[in-house]
Length: 339
Image (cartoon, rainbow, N blue to C red):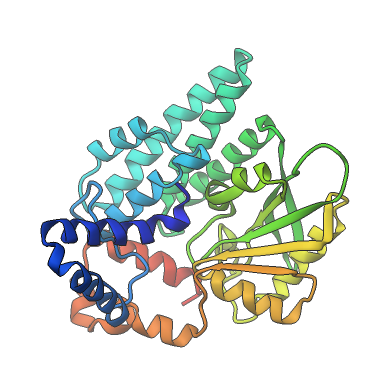
């Protein structure tokens, strides 16, 4: 299943369980869940437990499993890692996902050396997700951050070369850096095709976006393009943090997309997830080359959204008592804003 549906499905499963226990209270259970979400907004809230007692860690484990449909996760490997992680310990989480990433990458290299390109490509994708998972709770001052981030990129680049159709890595010059991304053609006909550009959210790497919807996009006759803009991926390491005017870097992205001979400029759609639900519609206000906008979900008021999140509503005493994994996750988010 696509990760964009995971949160909704979790809510529905939870409500269904309550309804099964007491059908008369089904409507009340649904109303209570919706009211709870309105009053205490948390983008990482989970309504069902997957494995860990630590809520934040369990949310991210669900995120890893959400990569299954895109070929970025194998259930047995994921459960093996989860069984070795110390519940709620960010260091243990980082170490175990890195170990599995190394193991799978070695398998990929052996498969490639033996001429088994399909197996190698599949393994490189799973290695990419493991290295990426290790980074979700890691700050950039950790000596391993740059190494693991480079592994995320190199694993996906290796997988892209072995994909059918191939997935091309590109870099768009922007200010004093480059915006890194990936492009897959809908087919090899040479004709211009409709194109979907995907922009991630407040915690994503461009590699994540492929596992959301990349394969599904190409199967439906669209070119697929995804890219990191300031605040995403490794760009904050270079002091390119999130900015209020995402239409500026997005102009460079659209210029690049429209320069490609495979792209039909009259059929250009942009899909934004999470914080991308702010950046994409805002860009569409300024750039009429965007013919269709899809968001999951729409962010219509940044100030209100952040004010209602836990780090906006909790007291300092509550924040000081947050579990270690939650502190690590929020610290990474704050860093991406340059705060």
